[in-house]
Length: 174
Image 1 (cartoon, rainbow, N blue to C red):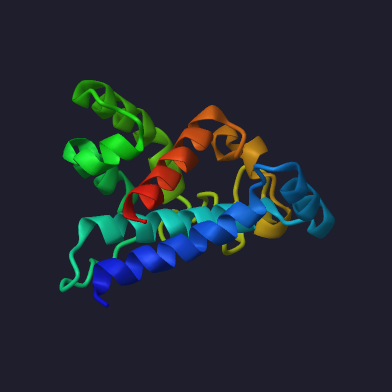
Image 2: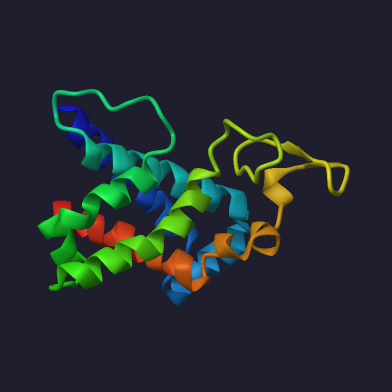
C-alpha cells in the first residue's frame, strides 16, 4: 500500500465517523440526539476527512504528501479536469462542472480554517480558544458553531453541497 491509498483509506474512515454524527436517516438522528454529540466533533471529523481526502487525491502512491492542513481548496481547484470525478458528481459538461467546483471554494476555505493551527480567535473544533469579542474562553464541546458562522451548520446548502462532493469522491474511488 502506498501514500495515496493510505490517505484515502483513512479519509474514508473519518467520513464514516462523520456520517454517524451527521444524520441523513431518522434512525441516525435518534442516535445523535440520544448521545448528544457536540457540533465540534462533527466539524473535527469533517476537517480531518477533507484534508486527508484532498491529500490522497493530490499525491501518488510513492510520494508522501506535504505536511500541510490546507489541501482541500488546492484539491478542488485541481479537480476541474478530473473526468472521473466530473462523472461521479453527475456532470457531463466541463464548464458546468468547473462552476460547481468554484461554488465549493468558500465552504472549503471555511473548513480549512478549522485546523488547530493559525489565528488564535478562529473557530476551532479541537481546542479551546480565547474570544476577545466576548472576553471569554470558548470550549468547543459547548460552542454553537452554526450560530457563530451559519456556513458551519450541516443543514446549510453550501455545507450539504460539500458533503455531497466528498461522498462523490469516495464513490469514484470505490
